[in-house]
Amino acid sequence: MKCTACGAEVKKDSKFCTSCGKPVEEMKKEETSTAATQPAQVVETPKKKSNKTLWIVLGIVGGVILLFIILAVVLFALFVGRVRGTIEDTIDEVEKYEPTINDKDDGKVYKTITAPSGKKIKIINDSSYIKKVDTTYYYDEQEKLEDKVSVKSEKEIEKLSGTEKEIDATKKAVEFVERYPRYSAKELSEKLVGEGFTQAEADYAVKNAGIDWKEMALIYAHSYMAAGGFSKKEVAEMLVFSGFTEEEAEYGANYKTFDFYEQVAYDVVFFKYTSPKYGSTYSREDAERMLKYDEYTDKEVEFGMKLFDELD
Image (cartoon, rainbow, N blue to C red):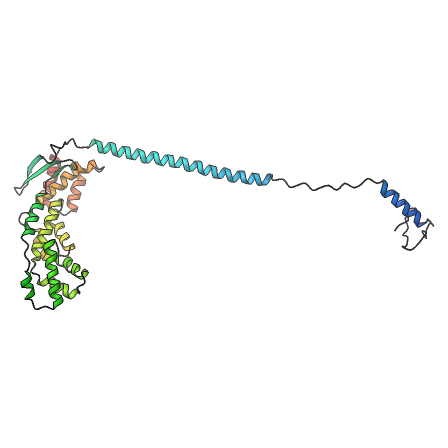
């Protein structure tokens, strides 16, 4: 400790200050008295840190989220408005071309035109198409051809020299054709394989069932003619695509009753009346380009464009 009088260092066991002689007991009393009279030191409790920064961050994040929500709502409203406007415009466009055909006029002949071939082509009123070329009679011709399809009888099949499985496959092939006479050899072979026969057995059946595949191609071709809008080349291509040989396809597409001026007329009437109802319009140039793309002959295209100009 230090002497309270002179400030000299006083040893622990000393009774007096060796410098000035002041008693240690007196020094202790003075220190005790001084400590009692000094005010107690106030210990300050540290204040909690402010949450101000946290609230600022949360406020910024919340603002950004709110901004995105507002932006999304605005964009959605714009999108809905645009879609609604498009729909309304389409409806208006369709209504301009809505047919004024009642039930009693539906199917009635609107106009009859004569093709260069001499064929009378009928344009009829139609509630769905407004007007169209009547090609549905091809379905009637198709059914007549189907009724004439000839195949080998069961007795004839049993006399064949094939294996038991080949005979069974041939009987099954005849069964399919009698039930639905619209197969190419390829399609019928694939169907037999699907029934569990081997490819060799299926090929044997197709070859020995007594089916005239040219007549089958002709039946198929009638369905394209009835649908309307096929050039001769397209009919042949579709037949090949369905599995007929080139020879069979040519036979089917060149049938004596087929008139492709009528098919051109079907397309032209569609361009002129039906397509505007569904939101598409064809200019004269568009129509001519489409007919050439479908590979009609030059004479057929010329007839089609003349008809395009004559129709109201």
